[in-house]
Image (cartoon, rainbow, N blue to C red; front, top):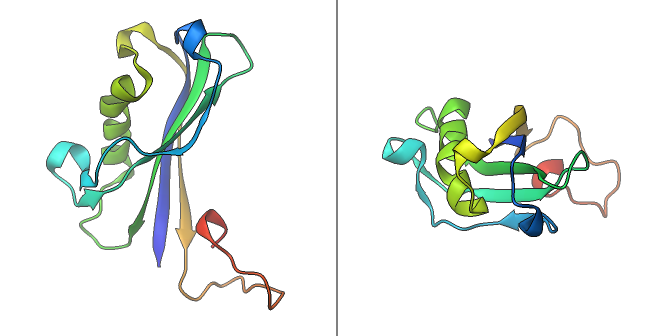
Length: 129
């Protein structure tokens, strides 16, 4: 059993000329301890895309998959890593951004799902698992 933790924001203040594309499952770090070195080793992935409200507004998510061990990082630890790593990932200074929304989510995964697949040729993978 495990969990996918997602944190992110929609913010204004990104440079218009660089806000024309998106990333899906982008990794720019090696596996590293979460919470700036205090947590267990974690691999982070990014998603980002322009928001429709303005040419300088962008939505970014940081997510990771992990087990349910007690030493795993908290959602707050991962959110702190999001703010620490976002400037390097997006090439922006946090002081230049105006957050419109901040979010977090948890998606559980199971070895033996309580919602079994209804068809014998379908396999649930990733967030669907």
